[in-house]
Image 1 (cartoon, rainbow, N blue to C red):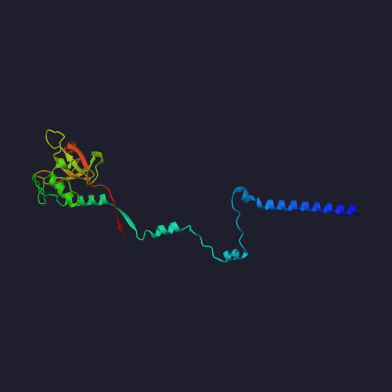
Image 2 (cartoon, rainbow, N blue to C red):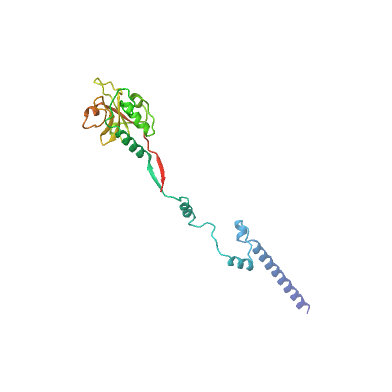
Length: 222
């Protein structure tokens, strides 16, 4: 009988020992998890009430994929056309210059009823809102230097027309395109249009061009 009681006590103690070991292992397993290993706090599980509340609320995205496109469209409430400022100025210069065709040439005259070569160019450019010096040698120093092959309408063209050429500027005109230029030529001819290919005298006496009308973009509204 004593042996049976002793055996029961031994078995009971062993069971308690294993039970204690099992509980301690379970506690350790609960304490050491994946979140603990990677160093992240384990998230708190939400209750059924909170989850139900989230499901009942409509999903509203924080950023719409079309927001950039919509904002861009709304930022342009009107249509814009790009207009080349230089083109408008050149048209104005050409129109004004041609309006003086036939005007007499008088040395030292500055217009509007008579001109010398540089008085003519100064008047025409000034009417287009561009101020240039009075005499041709000074006009030849302003703006962008242009070679013959790069001439564009609206450029000034400079010449050495003396019999004994020195390379010094003494005459000026305005280039119109296609080899044509307009200038206050001489006492007998006044303001005329010549072509470089037809008047080879001026092509041979040509020195350089100057560009004082530069391209600038403006905007117009429809």
